[in-house]
Length: 369
Image 1: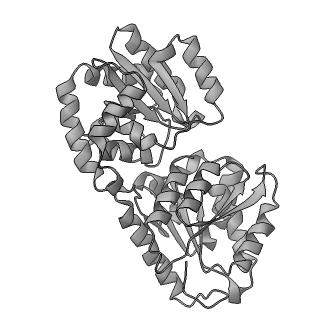
Image 2: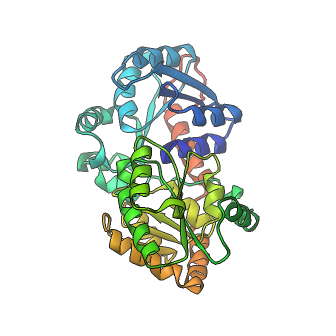
Image 3: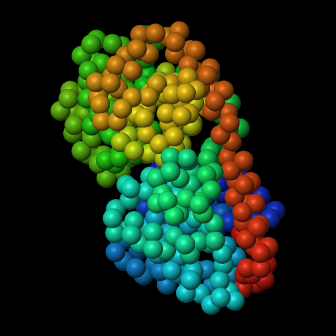
């Protein structure tokens, strides 16, 4: 469950249920178990399209049957693979019953696999509205697609971030962090994009310097065993704890002294927003919109991607300077308060209303999302 999935959960939770009924469909069986449980508990209808591989295209007729059977009024597509093929599914529905399509671009265009990227570009103009989650994501789009795409920075439920002092002591106790140790947390799934090899090397440098620092990495994914092996080969042991998937990633963030992200590329990571909102200074690679938000705002430090020495040096400077960390924490908290998911949800529902009132009717004729 990465950033896009967490945004989807937050958006549906923030939606106006008096005006819209939300359904969520996902492709891969078991891949979104944590997400579907949370959505269902929030009263959102969840539909598994029931395939075990992206090469199994039986999900396409199943999605079509779902849209027709549930009389869906509007479709909002996320992520390039499902967007590229989902558009074709919607287009196959007779015009009189065809729902309008909204699409969100979550990540930097060039880092999608070539085949999916080509499919995505070929079908992009079938959307009725497109949004990008950051200005960096928007700027990476092919020029002809930018003019039809709106930048809409998403966010998080900021009203859930009020128990930081209590959470901090609980988290530090849970992970055995000593009073004089600095806790550095990353929240990033175990994928090549996230630069764990850079973070591990930076951690080794800091430990070799004798600094009182402990790392906690929250996330799972296809490279989890590879990251664990690299951690062990570097002899980091308990100095670099790996939690796997956690439902309480935001709670763990609130217990940190520093948040770190070593990604090679990003759009605008939700974890950076969350760290700032709970008042944790950010040390990140200069990816996506992070430099504009963190570097210019003063709530953290950015360094070049792929440079463990620079990452270690930035962390070192803050580990040894608690007063600077406290100053950055206040700046980060003030900046993070702007990312209220309710603002993004309201804008999306304005887009839905505009499309539905423009004459695109659902099978039932109702004006619902």
